[in-house]
Image (tube, rainbow, N blue to C red; front, top):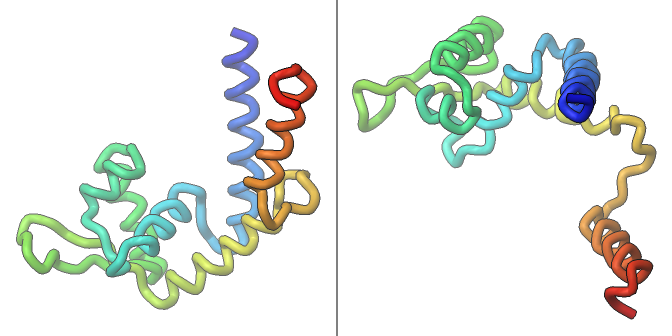
Length: 139
């Protein structure tokens, strides 16, 4: 129970810091996450159903998120070109700009980690090698 409580508390702290960084951009983490997901697609648009699958949220949550992003001019709903039953959420130029600025804010919070290394994988590999060396696994 102590581990579960600690993990839950850590999640709350991290999410609070993220939402604080996104506040000046009138975004919550769920709206930021939806914008980012759409922007990563080849066409800058995704079906709402696919967004729900990828974000692992209920379709109603996707609809509410897209409603808010659309009201703010950050996405627009468009008809799917080949499936008349589906609607796409398409990121707007304003949405891309807001996402870019919000992402920069997210990078700047760093969660108290100080300077972020350019090659984090190298640092991780070196740390793991040091742990293995100290355990006598490698020389």
